[in-house]
Length: 140
Image (cartoon, rainbow, N blue to C red):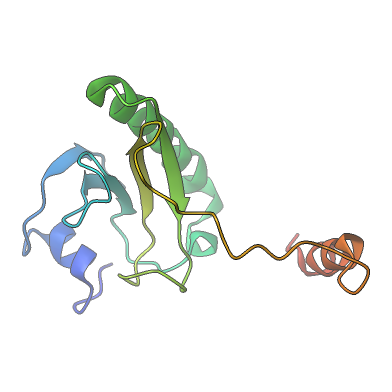
């Protein structure tokens, strides 16, 4: 089940080129063609879906297990000090197909990804109020 307009589905169908890192029956991992750092890997399900919450629960363990393997391989294979694991849902999602990034990181590599702006909790925005809204919306 692929989307004819999706760039990642085109890779999955073999219609677009990508440098494959790992393939399974349900998932494909390949190098990002515009990497933050060389060795930046994307993990995608072969079936088209947009959000992490669209991934069927029975596949979530396999998806995360592959992500763990990729994390170790990126760090060990490239000699990286660590990695950043990232999934964007809608906002900042350049391709509307679920994809998990495994990005090699090193100390002082220049990436300033999470530095701002920050929005701390305060008397006007109490943390418990936000937690209660999230708890109330949790799917069962």
